[in-house]
Image (tube, rainbow, N blue to C red; front, top):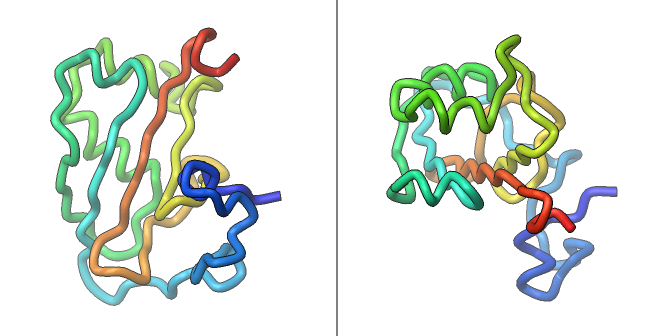
Length: 128
């Protein structure tokens, strides 16, 4: 079941008022895509300023986004997101326009002006 974390906070956990879902996902972008990256959890302690605006070529995935993000994060912060093998850590949750991503192969696209990527790093106390 897809439950948007932002929808729970806004009182609509089952997305009744949602306009987009996975079945009605936005079509692939024809040109470059503006992306807003928002970091939450332990990453905020690293002095991050939300949001980081990136511009990605069409057809990118979250893996490509993380490669671009690596240029803006210190190695310690990046190590909180991905393993040395380049896979998402279990404590890292990524949302694309409010929907949890299935993995780094998830396409980055949006029906809006810019895709909003939310990255949350949970600690034991936060994930409780």
